[in-house]
Image (cartoon, rainbow, N blue to C red; front, side, top):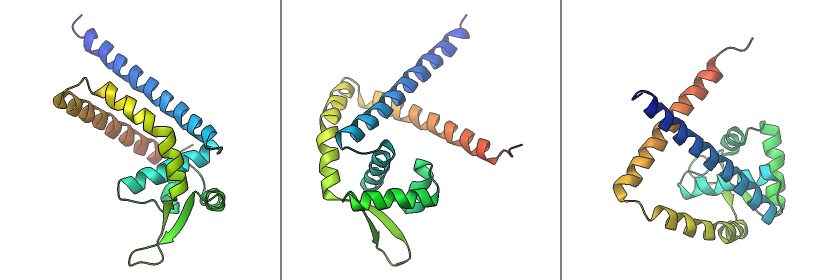
Length: 161
């Protein structure tokens, strides 16, 4: 019986994370509706903003990979976002051939307005945990992400029949 207990706990953790991910997707759809955007456009904007916040702005090619679009479809998406004033393509750094994507002040304000109350609520929800407990959650999430990324790479490397 002792062997079944950890497996049940693993399932509970994975079920919880699956529900969390589904809720994140619904939040993305709600942000899209609030900003009057198509969900793919909103997903792209969120990815661009997150990359900027990490100090590693996306290129159009990397955005295409992340949103699962062809380079041509990504170019059309970026054209729409530029025309709406949400995103700019910028040539920065020493290699002027490299284009990076930057979000505009206006779309950042819209994202902040939508997500800031959630950030406060999430902070309150996590406030009951110790630093050590939070570090354990970060470690567990990192391990799960690594396992999923490895599996994904293996799937993509497997020849299709």
